[in-house]
Image 1 (cartoon, rainbow, N blue to C red):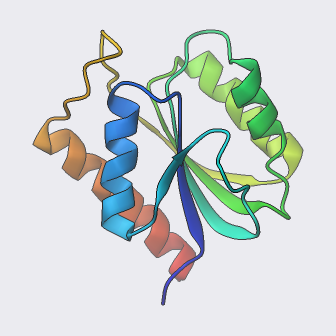
Image 2: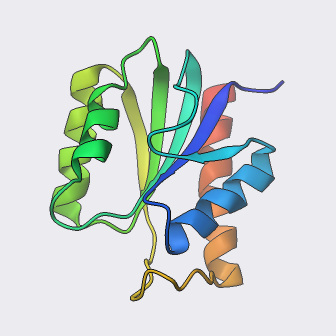
Length: 138
């Protein structure tokens, strides 16, 4: 049974986009950037790839603070952000009402134009995502 989900990323550069496209192909869902062209609407699951420094950009912050239960029930984050930034993102999402299921730390690229992902990194992300999907289908 197909689950209603979205796969988004922020910003539109680096390995995060490559990871997002991997999940997009795996689940045959169109990937989009944040803010998305079409807003979330009663999604069961949102996979969101985020590359961020110590400060969360205002566009990303606005999006995360808007993840109410009318828009999305569950969020799974894959990110290269620092732990403190991840905790801040999780707090924004929880405050809005959505549930953060899990956070997967991924290795970002040193330079934003480098987008290559090693096969083992790709498989690790796919395995993690499959676990999240299986958890919601039980």
